[in-house]
Length: 231
Picture 1 (cartoon, helix red, strand yellow):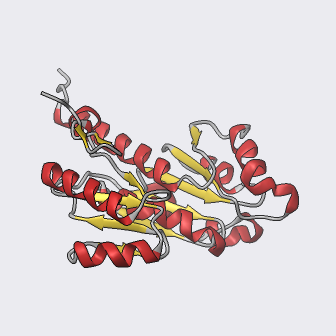
Picture 2 (picture 1 turned 60 degrees about the vertical axis):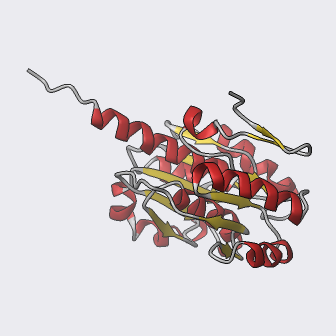
């Protein structure tokens, strides 16, 4: 049996949820409304849910007329149909340094929610006003996985990494001035961070960070289900 459906312009990976734990997600940029619609129909038929990232409001308006029960989030530019049939234990906290980082932070938050994670948001807590972050220290240390989004020099994930004993996923953004180099400066800063236990995704990749966080909670749930009692 084929593990994909060939639409000519797209080979829809209907086996991905079985292999990886989550269905194929559609990247909206560069695809027409008709192409997205056809891919959505096949994924819904097999999984009962689908998500489209980086979708313009114009395309979303057209798709909503075809899928009226779907939802479109204008900040994250995510189009969602259906919900996860599972809710993982634990909590993903999404932090961002500044209000300008919200689109990337919301991409992470909305994606994680769709994948079955409980999400808490903590926004505009950059290091330029470090007291804002430290006033939430208790809440930060209780999170299971932390996604930390920052532009400019990208310092926030390193600070958070020094406060917690949990995985920190750093997301550099393209928010910043000249020498920021459209996200390259925070990317390199995060990659060379001295905070242990921190991983880094691509520039503006809130989706990738959320996917990694969901996999961590998924693995933790599998471990809890197969715990061996000490004797």
